[in-house]
Image 1 (tube, rainbow, N blue to C red):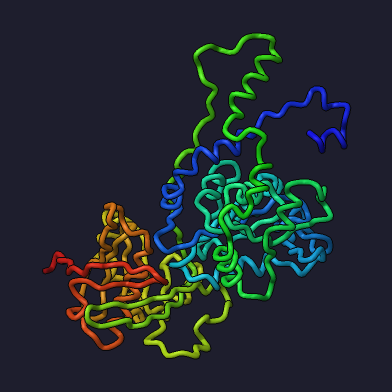
Image 2 (cartoon, rainbow, N blue to C red):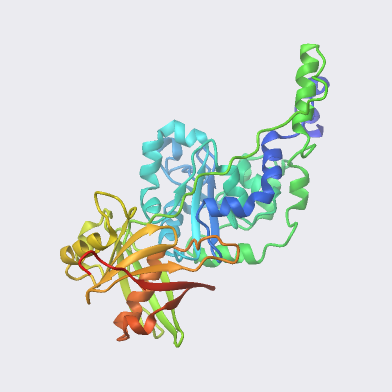
Length: 447
């Protein structure tokens, strides 16, 4: 009200402080954080990174001067210390795809509706294409973004209200663009730009994200949160009262003013159709435990493990059969297909694995992923086994990509060990998380 009085005093007599329905819906849904995370396929030990951009030229998705901007199909510029830097968005999308281990991070994009509607969904998806094929989920422009904020471990954004909402619910924020000169220095959003850390192009993206998360202190943005709404949790009552007063009639008696709760989004696991390079490390052999680190290698990106300076047990390549880089299927160590076991076009799993091993002669293992926590794999030796992750203490399925289980078993076999030595259970380690995976032989019709 003070800022309104200084900028436009003539409207102060009719101004009303009535809270924020959007923010109230977010606050009401905070207890559902774990459900939203599972809906986005975020498993234990994974960090969800939300990339957010508003529209216009100096946004993260904008061009900021010579680059053209979202309006002209350009890309983003980061702001550090008040000075424009080089375009950061192409670097950011590339690093999201290749630098973050697939099983330790999940990424989503929340873009302003004006970006989607100004250019059309096809153009936006084209700009995000490589990152999407490497597992980034593009959240629809109107619904789902609030749930993603609640689920997030870090929001990488700009001067948008989305980044401000994220700070207001105490999420770590890392700013990839922030045009301070475009903002009223007295505004709460400008205060966010002076408070949150800034992304630096050229430094490790993973290190900056991890630092933003690990250095974040509880209630770090407490003052900003207090400015997010004049009356948190009360907007429905305040607005209804205002509307009925304007109409000159009484509010309904005995009926509370309510907002629709945020719906639970559909299950959206990460799907990676670009080639994936896998580093495997034998943690121990009795009981069997294999660590895997999987990184995407889209297009002409360099092999992330080309210049390894430490000893590893093996490195191999996994390629989805539906990849655009179809030439890589001929040299893949593991070929993956995702479909239901009763898919008449492909299944059953044993039939597809036999076909895949025949079609791709350099493939050592074929994995048919027919569920969120299990798959069937066929080997060159003629073995057909089902890999199934043990459920968690709460009975819920493991949300690790079953392709990681296949990679662990492949690494075990190429190390010279037998399938029998791995059975009946192998532990697959991704980052700091251990997944117990059972190994069961699958009977084929001929058997």
